Length: 360
Ligand code: ATP
Ligand code: MG
Image (tube, rainbow, N blue to C red):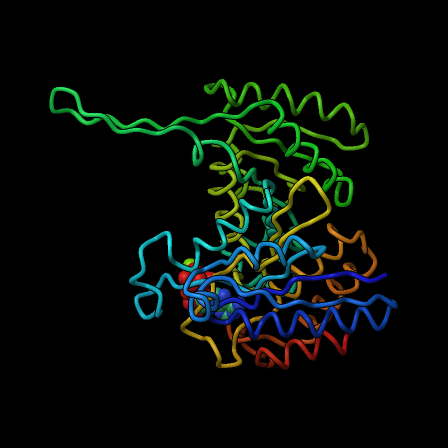
């Protein structure tokens, strides 16, 4: 088969890490007889430098005309960034928000995996983490508190601010279905997280998830209150397979889960709409402090490419092989600087990519 991939190298370490992910995809293509066509798209600072805006309409069209998007990272939060002084709507990140919105990417998937070989980076006790864990957080991305009505009013010299958390049943149903679909490809367990003891929106969430769950008899599922979930993530992370939750809870829980792994350079992510299309990118940012130095860890981006094969192209065997190759390279003792520990072999960005390609 032929697959069309829009590639956004992006800013900071983006171009270096995307290059390694492309190397891995090309190797997979040769091994399994697929062809991947790559079309480069500018987004973020890279687009500002050329077009004066972080995202052009043409770039949106190109992304849409491909089967999936592979992205490095978009950046410029630090004062040293050339785009730092621009107003928010003109900054690199605004381009990414606009692209997500234009492509209707409502489901954000963030795996939090602790590899047996990297257990030392995990802040939890050995008896809690055992041989590691592997969970997937599915966060609703286009509704809830961050997109609800808000206002600030002043009455009798007292300021009051409102934010509203709104979901309709269709929005809940589509994310819930996605969550259960993903669980079918993984450990067949869903933990739906809400605050149904207090919030109406959570009670509706629970009702709709119950309905969707009936369509997936093979998947075991449970409801969990968000405060309990935050606690369980550090108390017993191994219990989770897919965590399904709304926008703000997912924002907070996915950061918590990623920090529990201790390895930001290892974590992939995906944003999906209701077709097979998806945007795949590492969970980390553009890390301008180490850009162009051949030291960035390309594994998060390589694993994002594996997610693309699995979730947009249904190439599960190929995705499994990439994930297995990453594990084997870690087992053989190779590490980029961010995950280096005593007695291991330090390698750069390019060498890490080549080791994974060779392992495949
Ligand atoms: P941005 O403004 O895009 O968020 P950032 O510098 O905040 O950029 P983060 O991803 O938040 O980027 O990373 C924080 C720090 O973690 C980086 O400055 C870098 O030192 C380190 N880091 C992040 N990603 C990687 C990686 N892939 N490999 C090695 N180190 C990384
Ligand atoms: Mg950052």
